[in-house]
Image (cartoon, rainbow, N blue to C red; front, side):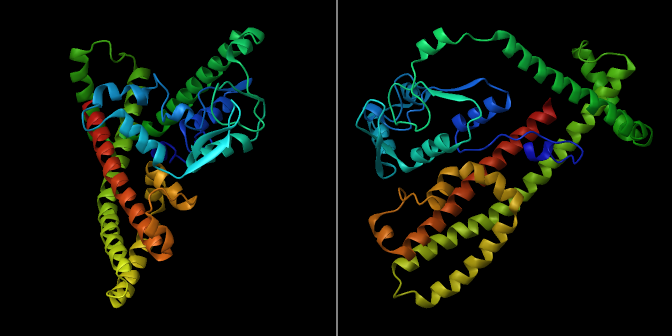
Length: 355
């Protein structure tokens, strides 16, 4: 959706630094909004008390609904704790605390991110974040009054920018659609028909004055454009998923052949050439791979940052086998992401058609 909305060359869409997690995005957003200080809460980036999720957290509470005899929360916790190789880091409580490479990447991001204002870590347990003082939340609140006027001023700025954007969008669309209103009678007739039907059940939905009519028509045309873009994206995904599935099947076959290298030497060379061709086709679709890449973050990080949690001991020792496994994992992740995005896009199209 962001790609579609930012496709207008005359308009610039805001950007938030992407650090790999919700918390890093929240920090970036807080800085963009002019936060006086950055306050970190719940960023233990480790496993205090040998728990993957703290008691009362959403991810822990969900087990109240899905836990069964065969799926115990203790088993899930064990899987989370052992999914990646164990690392040790300095603890706020003194000594060391258990963590892993994935969490240490976020630790490094927090430590190395440029700090325009003061940062405070209110965690009572977890890893030490170098350069970010550990503080007591209650003490900080007592010593630092919340400036409600500053908060209100930021809210007013956001509201002003959004209203200004809507106004300029309305004015530009009004000029552009003035000729369209005259030329595209079919669209306008269809719009008026939809408008009259909707007004029967929702009399207050649209104002009868001409300005509101033109504005609503502008929104109607924008909605039509977004639907068109989503349909194109959906069609592109259908074609793309075929290539990705081929890559997943071939990389799985290559993995098995590398495992029995002596038996399949000739076939390996042939399949490697075919794999190169598929790799080229997949990587050439940059727009799609960028969108899908966000959905397979863990798999991508495992490959680019050297995580080996998904590899067996044999795969770690045999470099070629490890590469074949990572290729399979990447294509498997891409295939799952394609299916997920395709499903979400189709749902969005259906909802927009019904709204």
